[in-house]
Length: 169
Length: 323
Picture (cartoon, each protein chain N blue to C red):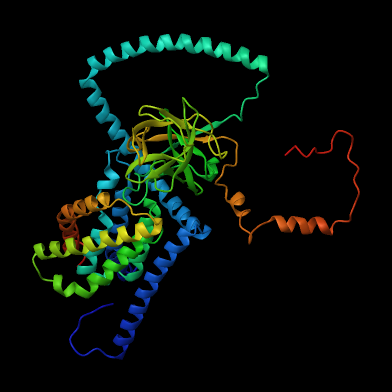
């Protein structure tokens, strides 16, 4: 075998890892942990990944991947099909437009940006969900989940940052 | 794809950008379309969802088992601490249950005799199937769980899912090796139930985060907190008498019920095959729709047959009162 082939394979594996990691995060989100109320307090891990990789490596996180990830999240969590897909696509669009704002800034700015965008995403999800069921869904769990998502962002962002600097060159 | 290099954007870049924008809009529209299709309960959306769940079910099953094992160890550790108290409680409970056992034996005997006396026809025999829960409930967006059992195990839409404590929900969406159970707390869940003591029938409606409420009770029904709610068996989907929960609060606006089953601790559940097709069978649902109604076809087939006068054998003709 030519070494070039293995190099290509290696590079390909590295480049696909952000999408792969996000799929793992989706699975992590729905694994039965039997912690009471876990599902309603678990942070939206996939949303964090979508935000993070769109800001830092949009070249490795193409549009179709966002769509696939959204569909996956919807199918596995039992949410109305297309709901999270729309939320992720919106986040992608907004972040891609504003990503220069985030690049090269301190982590605090990134976190602030994420909390604003996640708030928009939570609101969008709530509106879509209520429209889907034609019933005003209690906003409590969504708000709580939003706060959990912001609280957990630094941890995941750190992990993804490490991944970024060590695996993706 | 999006390289920020120096220099003015050339024509290729502009076209690329436009295409990207169109793709973006297209995907948003697709996602919205999927939501609409899902709302209309289109078969394709359910099929796609089932396929995806099926693909990931083995992974989730593989992870769910160790997770359950770890939890069992933790539980055992906790139990060791409360061993003495637990023992006392169990001795007490055992005494009480033994008394109940004698009562149950007596009643069972009596029941057999009485059934014999009146030639009672028992309903269809239910068969059970155990399945592992392989996902947490959807939390904010839906109250449902994935089970590692699907159409290859004979699971069908509309079947009741129970534990030893009571009703968990019903099957809504079956794939080959996985199925989704819609919990009774989900916004879409409507279960025909009755108050056990008065046999007043109603519908138990889920409300996602909050406790499910009892609706459509006949006027003048007396309900009080602590009343037991069981399935009524109407609609042909569920067996009668599965315990569902206790009335927790009654006020002018709503009657709330707290379920017996805590859906957060589910590891293994049982799916009841009652032998009935249930109200959620797609083919039966289809007959309500004029477009896909198979009935007119049948009639045309019958018309093409040569007309024959068939004289029924004596005694075999259908009386109008018969179904």
